[in-house]
Image (cartoon, rainbow, N blue to C red; front, side, top):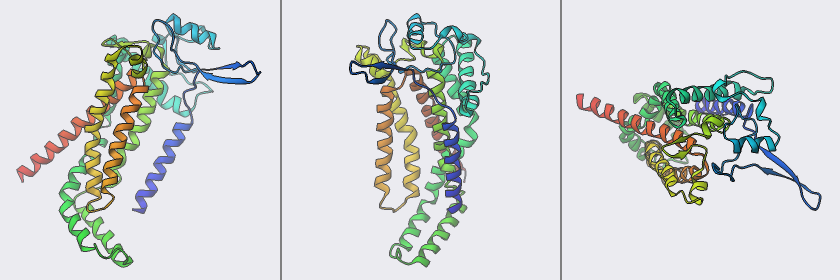
Length: 331
């Protein structure tokens, strides 16, 4: 357990280092009021024929083709003439670049652009890129998904263990013995507490990388997918009367529910006969609600990535369960 906590702390520090060594810079305009006080306002693309409602980024990677966007950037201190066309963008390294930019953002933006121009649609490029990354990570994430099945097999023995030590919570020696017996059960069923957390550590930096790569690449957020503007947030579109954008948050809710359902089952099984089980279920429900609400304020493009990634998780979990059932039948 101590080893697990130590590894977890190392991973958290590692992720924070990457996240803090480079980030998207919002396009901000400074205005002076009648009282002489200066205020800073974030620039949003809320006016114009092709307005998306998104918050614009200052450090975009290539030149916009939308004249409305070009004018907004030029008026707010970003000389778009100095930027390369998105078709010619390459992940070059600059002195001002952080490690996060060099390792994640620029390579990912380049891949999305190449795929987009190849398949002639950037929404489809986001989906393909999401699938490719998940396929590459499949051997790792499969181990995480298998923990739920292994925990189900171990559940009867874990329940017996809980009953055995039910009235010995104040006995330190008994609790140490319980911990040793529990570790023996985990070893017997090949259960790794750490591998069950792997996807959580992987998902966050991937999501942030996609979010920043999309927000900093005009060719992507200027594009569309089945009539949905990739840079538009569902909330902004619905406010403009484009009700059909509600489909993105609805699908996000459905796939998130089913993808987290397996994780919730895993955590609850791990907490067998534990009074905090109800709080675990509540936490999972809160995560689903927060992610769904957030999808209203995030661009359609990042919504497509989340849907792709979560749907992959659902299918992966189904395959793991099916292979587990097949193995039991053969036995």
